Length: 352
Image 1 (tube, one colour):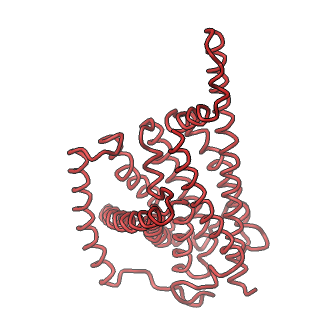
Image 2 (tube, helix red, strand yellow):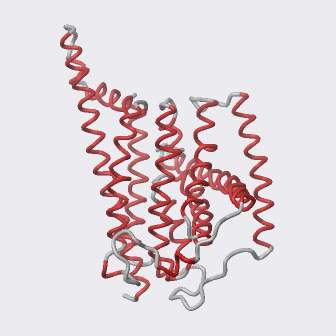
């Protein structure tokens, strides 16, 4: 196996480890919380002389568990925190394993002293310009994903629509704010920009951006979300390489999730197309159109970073970054999880 394949194969297995750690710890913590809540209800029912027979009905327990998962703030936070506070640091340590280091950096440090000197600040104008770019990327990606999800749903019979929307519907707004607008952007940027790009950028910065974006799209395990996550991943990766600072990508990620997920939920909690939501959506499309024009002009002016000279991956992206055992395994795991989650969601909806 050549050096590039070895490097990215290790990355693929490190991300499989992240999926395993985050899902196992999240399932254990949320399972314990759900068990305690159900047990408390059973004790309360028994104390009141109520009928406990319903707790032997699998359909009722499943329905009750789904209800707990979709609303209380504590369950949402409890299921996410282990993956973020334990899974992300452990994954960064695996990524930065001694055998695969290109430079003598230890622990969670993926910056060389030289790279720290390359940091640059964005002006307010530049930051707002990049924020404007998120709108067309989000809408174009969502449209592609929605179209493919509709085709897959028709062909397979499984609901492949936006699972994120179905999870957010009826969810406590505070839970959405904490989980989707605050926690997710911070830890996703740490892992996928600081971790993945920090590990891969010496093999070509554009290659690292593309690899990070593909991983970011796949790890959402949702056909609907893959394309806009990929496009946003390219943008955030570019900004991170350009500035060498996470604060900008975290800020843009927070703003995108706030205006893309949180505000629509406040306007229409059940996502039904109310007049207010229609106006807001129309405004988003208008801003996206303006953003697309500015994005095209930005590219045509030749403002994009050039490919890294002298790197092991001289072009924009190398097939060796993906065609290796670790990355292929990671892609298969993500696709399997996508199918499993979609199937589980369809079964759960049929039971409720």
